[in-house]
Length: 379
Ligand code: FA5
Ligand code: MG
Image (cartoon, rainbow, N blue to C red; front, side, top):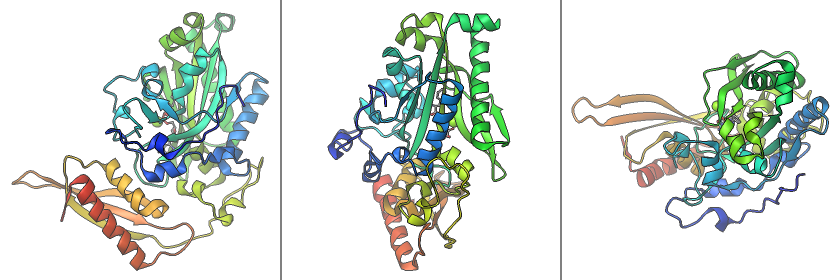
């Protein structure tokens, strides 16, 4: 891979520190360095290579590929260099894993855009694991994989087409990504959401694919803000670029009909042996139809409470048998004004049956942790 590549060996003390802002959990640390996208027979490796093939066929030799950039990045790389404002929600420790006040686990592969432009790259693809504190359900997981794409254009290119530079870059971007969707899925229903916004692109758009009867967002993209080019690429002010960031799990779920994002982390042979390097035709066959187990918990909110914090607790206790955490009822007391929430937690293993005893123990621990770590008052 590229010269900027570095082996991803991350030691525990590199990410779990005594810094007051440190919020990386043991669970998350254990996932770092797994690099599922490096495995050619894993659905994430298969989809990554299929995307590489597409770009290579369309633009031979054009895109430089980076596959193992270190996942701990500076706050400046993850946010500032992308013009993400100081008060943007994504900077909140509720959403992002902080190693210290200066370093984070990258929450998107966009964290490498500016650095790679500074190193003189004008067309590149970066694949890597990214980390976000997020909800628990079938399409969200706190560690997932993205591929970033950037392509810089020269004035001759848009002048030759007789277009304004932004129009030209947007047209090229849409064509490139619609072509990718076709390459991966053949005839699939796609639509562009033009209401999307990213601080680092203008215009910004998101691509959605119809999956199991619902629109699933698979990537965000847009025309790169000109100041990012000006600040990082030699003579960048006179050029124009597009950028995209796509979710590999989401694409693989659509391609292989994988119903739950947790499956990507399964080491179960019944999952892994269904996939073969280079084979895009696999339709995943469910090997487990184990019943779900629902547990509701109701509590008065505290200052510390957020949905992401509760999800982090559930994942910490239950690991991958946590299938969904969902708010099902909310109520504010007419007299004292306190708010109560009821969450339904769904537990289900993809690999085996769970016992009542096991689930009750887990649920008791979740309840206890919610009290001690978040200060909620159980009802
Ligand atoms: C971004 O991360 C931007 N950096 C994308 C981008 C790059 C925009 C370059 C413009 C230019 P967003 O947060 O929407 O955007 O995430 C991009 C994709 O990652 C989503 O479309 C989805 O496919 C995937 N994704 C986001 N959150 C999760 C999650 N919790 N689990 C699995 N996949 C996710
Ligand atoms: Mg999005």
